[in-house]
Image 1 (tube, helix red, strand yellow):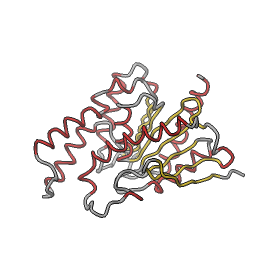
Image 2: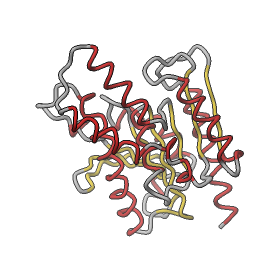
Image 3: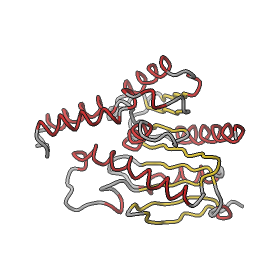
Length: 262
């Protein structure tokens, strides 16, 4: 009988859950960090944590800034802090990685990053910054961070919401976002295995972004076989069970390849 331990810890101010088989919690394991979506929390992804832990992975589920245990009473509209949250999460990934690495808990240098919606967007952004991410999964997120951010800002303005920044600050923000936009820094992917899942009727993060980025990858990556794209008909902005199982199978398959190469 498999027993999965779910442990709550706080690493340098980052609340997180750690999922692993009870008999393996102190062993080096292939590691997965999974990031939740906007207004979500780490507990939202416990089902995926269980599925992957049952396959022998250590799964880290952190709370993003202003989410879960880090919810701030003075933040009324978390969407206005979207890029700030993404940028902070990208930085905090290095904190999580360093802690695991220093404790020698990552086996075979296998460090998978994946996430839902905002978490998927953060995943794509992190791929522009860290080569130690061995493979990644974008679940109804987008690598086209600059285009998505501009569209999101336009929607907020049309709703009559006053932005907490000046036009100059906004221009500087959008310029900075380009540094984290994987579609504009495609060479940073460096042929690492990438899984992309998207619902074809997604109105929050448009499906068109995903399919256009996939075509860009096929044209620019030396080994297009490293890219797996899965779409789901009649599905909007919600990760289905089918998608979770597909991601779990894909991460497991990639881990087997990593193991064979070591």
